[in-house]
Image 1: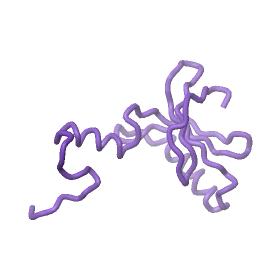
Image 2: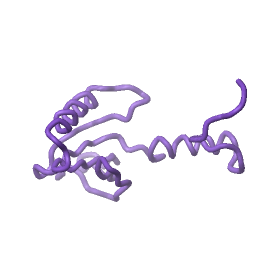
Image 3: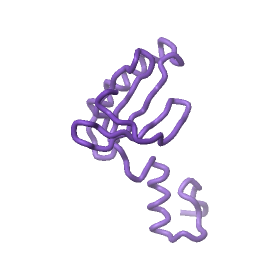
Amino acid sequence: MENYHVEKKLSVGSGGCVFKVIRLSDSRALALKRVPLVELSSSDMRQARLEVSLMTRLHHPFVVECLDAFVFDGADLCIIMAYMTQGDLASAIAVRHAAAHGTGGGRSPRQPATGAI
C-alpha cells in the first residue's frame, strides 16, 4: 500500500471495497479492490489466488486490466486494476443508452426488449 495514495471509496459490496487510488510512482489513477481474507474459506482463498493469477495474465480491450495484486497486512487481498472513468459497467451502459435514446421514457438498459423480432 506504500506505493498508492487512497483518494476515495468508490463502492462497497459483498466481495469487499473498491477505492480510487493514485500510484505514487507516476500519479496514475487506478482502482484498488480490497477483499478481506478472514471472510474467505480455504477453498475460496485458492479460487481467489487462481483468479488473480489469470487476471494478471489476461490482456483484452474489453476486460479491465489487472495491474498488480498483493496481500496487505496479512488480512486483505488487494487487486490493482485500471480505473474506469465512467464507473462500473452498468453505469457505462446506462450512459450510452441515454445518449442513444434520449433521457426521457423508453426502457432502461437492464429491462429486456419485448415484442416480436
